[in-house]
Image (cartoon, rainbow, N blue to C red):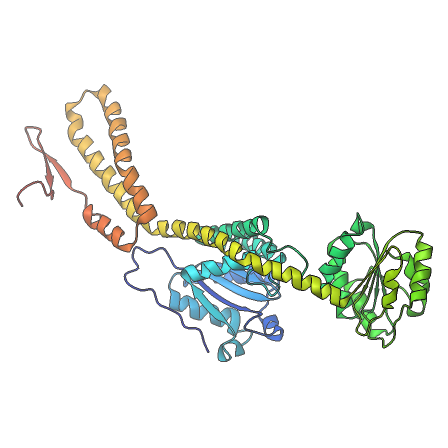
Length: 453
């Protein structure tokens, strides 16, 4: 089902331009579909440069990751901007997105709230994952570089990034590992003082090993080795990690003592490391600890090896228990994170609403300055020349002070009705009153309400 666009309600002449967002993510579309509308960095920048030149668009920012592609717009005219963006960005690459209802549309405060939640990790496939905040920062920098974002979207991105940072600092939403790769990292940190000096051996070259290898590489591990029976998986592994050493499968028992961390994830029906293999390895290590993580089902390492001194053996059940415990802790932090986002979003909305007041405040200031100038021009003939500058400064200060509090009130509490009343009260749609000076020097304001009419 195609999401509905909700038109602006009521008179919009005094409303700040409304945000519009069109997106696709892991919740509404499979990977094969998301890949079609994923943009490389250079392609995304070219797209933003192109879209911002369109008459339907004032500002635009593209956020494209492996799990989501979202286009944030400040439209010139909402309906035409929506049709253009949906067609040119999404349907041009994947027409089935519309027919299958594989996308979502948000506008106004919902669009802003969505970006705040994305930046904080609340919308991620893995709750609280940290990479997305960096990806939002990259999108902000890219849009700034190609000049596709302006006052509103820059402020939106700045505040979303700030809110995401607060959630990271003030809650435990991103704490604890929730993937096998990072769970192994956490276990290793509890044993070794420096991860980057650890030697790591992966037995098996499938997806599980690649996930663990990715995590270790991100943490600066340089000494990584892989051991696998077959050739095709090994080739695929080396394509991703070309610096990894290869340990022949038949040499695994002889070489295992050389490594500080050993992770097994093979489909072998029998243990590939017996108790005797691990006892011999620990004797060769001479009291140096080893972390052995057995992700195999059935188990790849004899469970009794866990009794050996300085050998810390963990299996897939213990890792899953750790991951579930961390996920539960993260879920408990969601209400605290949402409170932070609500406060930050309210600040952005206050700022955004104040934009609608700026034209009224500008008109009010111009109206007051016009009156001041006309009054000065009419009275200046009666003043000595040396007094003119002082009177000019005094009246300028007086007008500024008189308009100070009304301007603040219009910015902070000026809804559409209030702004309309301000226009009517000061007749801002009309030409400022003309000041006439009679022969006797008296001043008369044409169009004022001081007379009987």
